[in-house]
Image (cartoon, rainbow, N blue to C red):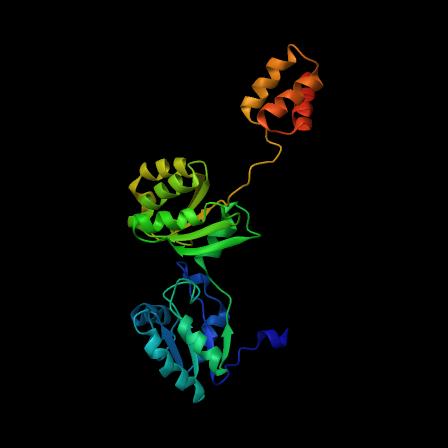
Length: 288
């Protein structure tokens, strides 16, 4: 355990440091130690991170690294790492690189043989999934859906048969459009969980078939405010033994004139379903 408790900072090392997504109490002791000890903190927004560091009385050198400058600044940070400096990478909230900047820097570090040390911590996608009540053994993170209707519909249509639980981030002003497109492309009965303002004062987690969820959101404007995660049920293949209503009606008509086995065989041939499935269904109805 002593080895696990060590918090020594290594030279020429990039640390990936998650920060709270709302509740400041969710930051880890290890994250605080790293932020206190590194030579430089590369932040998505230095003002935002500055407030976080101020809250924890951490005096650190900050360096702006965001979507608009990352490809250019990654080389400068790589040079600092190669010179022996230690750097912590943070985003505004949650785990860096998960829909946040950092990919180019980490990629270049891996190419150059620079050590990259990831710290575990807050991530809105995983936090929402853990409370959604949908299968979590296999899931697919999709980030934000496209902003425009056609792109959003095309993306959803490509995922219509995806069996894994789907995770999306969504913004306040696009929530209604996204829920409507999910209903249109995946079906109004597809179960969706809306996790909003996770870890914050107004946290809410609501799940329902998407058509019902859309109606629920429309009831109160506050239900579409804040930072949101959508957890969408994966595609469920129809049961091979499911019997169409038409076949059951035909079976019922034939049973009044023919022996059960013959009726089941004819109904199965007419509708292209399994004879044994129809026969078992008829037997179960007789027993009831």
